[in-house]
Image 1 (tube, rainbow, N blue to C red):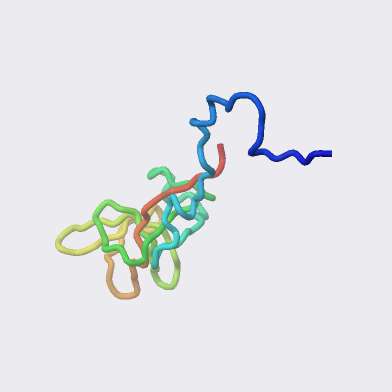
Image 2: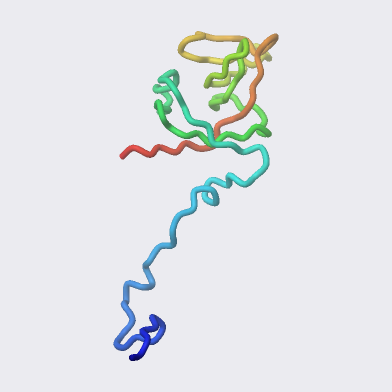
Length: 122
């Protein structure tokens, strides 16, 4: 009995072979191997208005510089939250639905800037 080997087929190759996509590796696509880059799962609906929903996964960079208008992960009074950064009157402010606005000073730390969003529900 002869053994079947996939590289020795008869007939023609499928013309669709040129259009087969490789498997998507999210770690590579989102560059999660970079230092200071982390996936963070969202809990709550605080930034639903920005399109960030409960259960989404954010890719954050802890080495990024603050940028006005970007969403950040901040630590406020030992609580981790998502907020939008604003620069007003030569100072950084956090805007969050539960905080209203908060000046970035004292017991406030901007830990990381959001770079990407991944949503799994379809």
